[in-house]
Image 1 (cartoon, rainbow, N blue to C red):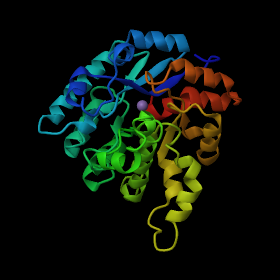
Image 2: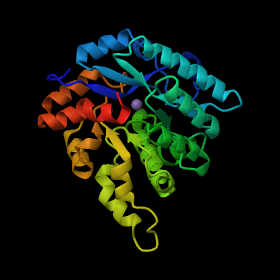
Image 3: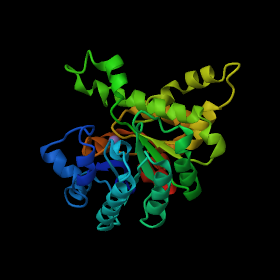
Image 4: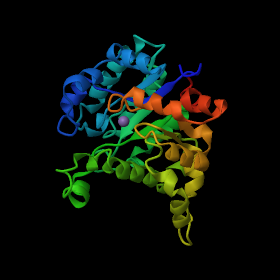
Length: 319
Ligand code: MN
């Protein structure tokens, strides 16, 4: 609790041993204490939550999750992963919820798994981590996933993953040795995920499924700062097909995961209003205390703070 307000965080990660083994050449390797934290559901995790004052976490698998599982056994593997996640969070239903991992290489199976996870396992939506192979998620073959999410009225959280090999070679390889995070939180994650969101709007998916709800972390992967420019450019004569600003402001929710910037928060609030912004941490990659220490510095009225810390998340996720 923070000043009597319930604190919810919804980009909080864990590892499933079988899924990590299957995706190990693309998952960022983690050893020691962080590995222990990632593999824990309700012991170290809840201790860390208690220490910082976080009441509820929505757990999601870390990247690349189900987006790097190919082959006929993918749907079965992800079912096992989601069953184990549901069991893990069921040990502390007062403190933990879950986002499903989906076998997006088989979009029909992914849509079915989303439905199963929400209707049978009580999950709050799903998280998708970057492209599936080289395919971005806006392709029409993936739309059954969004159709199902819209029908179930649950959000899809678009999360970063390591950029495509061709992007790494073209953009980052000169600086990767000295600055390994340039491909991840330093910049690469942002570009990949913003591109995914922009492509999803350009695809026309929201025209067909207008109530689809999308969550972006890291205060919107830079899009709020550029919203005026993107919207102006994409509505020049001859390309009036999508209303970029309207879609972004209506269909997207943003979290503060790994980006505890007050100017960033103010930019998002001015562009989207306080009903679309939600606190998150990105534990264990980011410390809960860093997030809560930042919350303590915010000069925000009680009603907006209540929305930001947990009220908006409770409405979106029906907690
Ligand atoms: Mn994350």
